[in-house]
Image (cartoon, rainbow, N blue to C red; front, top):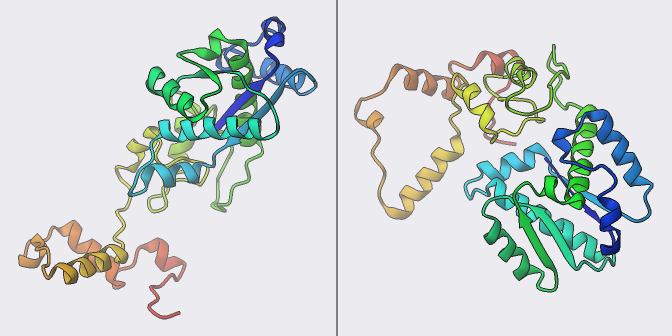
Length: 267
């Protein structure tokens, strides 16, 4: 995920409005690239981006103490504002596309940066040229990052025809289907917390973690009580039983067996 910002003198805003910026999603890729190149050589504007790795997003959103996408977006915006201030730019007005409740978001920013006037609005990238420019910076950076993405995974038959990355894109949905793994899910390019992935997890293998059992044992010893499971008194589904056999090492998953992966107790 890429967040972007654009800054310029207040006196330049009228000129900015004549540069044909628009919401980046409404522009063709060639036009976005052209406008971005124009921005790079324009001495009257500056820009910055915050690129957040899919794995970082997944870790934050799926962690025990979850951080939702709105909070991540707010933190990114605050980080970009701080970065621009730290290079000596005097910010007096900041315009943002809202994420979540606009009034609460604006109040949050005003409390953090009391000397700055904030305008937080829905569809700000269509209303304010400076936000339109920022959206172009973010979109072009995202597209270029995807085109140059180096896969860490080495599975066979991987391809780069992942489309736009938007949930309604048939090419994106087809790519997810082609690159789903029943144990590991998807390549690291994919944000696992993405709602579009949910339907693909229905037939994925359930993993039993020994650490969970250890945590439960420690908790039981501390409380002096042990939570009773149905399996303790003879109830066990065939699926559960097969999982227990597999986790014991007697019936290893074919994937692990083929790669001679074994459980270690001493290092």
